[in-house]
Length: 523
Image (cartoon, rainbow, N blue to C red; front, side, top):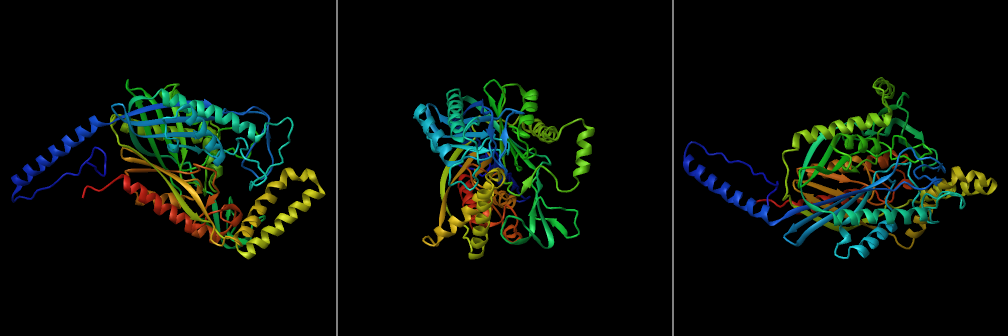
């Protein structure tokens, strides 16, 4: 028997007439429900395995996430991949499974995911690797992963003395595949619960103005900008919502020891994004502080909610925030970690006694075809001119490639898209979606840097008690809203996006339908 909420049922109320009959029927109904729950509890058992592995590159290494080339010669923190393997079992039979890996990277290229799945399948042929997915925390101080000529961001990485992207990918695949095998092979019966708390981490980073302003390096002039100045008279508002919810899932072993947690923050890890050193950003101090609180073996999966238009750096009140952080004797990273850890502890203290060893585990994988955002004639002409300008600059001064090669390829990618449109007028892209039910909570994924409004749409319509929208389960571009496209600016212009608002709403609708299928009505 299925219920919209695991382990819960609405009460009934009887009026004064016929109350004894209604009470008797209500009691019988509750007995039937209790018996059904008891039967289901004995039928399935949740098995949990977890592992953490260091994925810090050898140095020097080129870093991803900015337009200019950065070569890191130091690592301020380690980078890690954190693995959670879940299996629902009925005696010796697997009912369903999910393997999640959170990675301190800017994104997850398709080829790298394919390589991980192939290696895991080789070592664990019994595992359905379609139900294995990786998410990136989107730290901009992690290695370049894809520097092939067709990349939209192409860096002039020296061939000698610097770790090459393909070398790092091979290293990553070996390390992460090994950690997945370890987590799967060490899974044991355990329990889970879910909780909701709040922490101010996300700040909307798109500013809106009363008039159109120049947007250097991107098509046209717009009324919106990423990281725009809020002190000018033309400033009117921040473009979109901010989401300060913090969703947490806790996993215990049979002995009652907390072994793993999923911490869901709707904000990318970009506080120190401009540095030229390897750094896991705010997730490193978060993990360190949680391990101090709950034990050194705790595996912490940091997952990023819909946050394409968010940043941990406020566009106003910054001086006041810095003063408070300084007076607390903290760094900016430690301050963000403090807020997250306080929220996690509050959730833990609230839900720690509400554990479920038989929580439903259902994992659905779907392929959705989305229409590509079409390149207009004007966008093509602008991008072609920008591409040619930067190409001429590099030809005249090869040393300038460190700063402008990515801008040239950023625009070249648009030119190539327009040219392909001539033969394929309605181009589409297939995207992989995962929707995973764990008790009353659901985790749903997307490949893109999804603007927060889309995440709110999914959460608002979801039948799950808690809905964790996880972005960058892939290497997708920004997916902006209608108003963002109208406003323009980086993250919303054609150079920044492959999928437009029409595809964004299709993504929302399909995700909600998949979630609803995991929470059938009692009627």
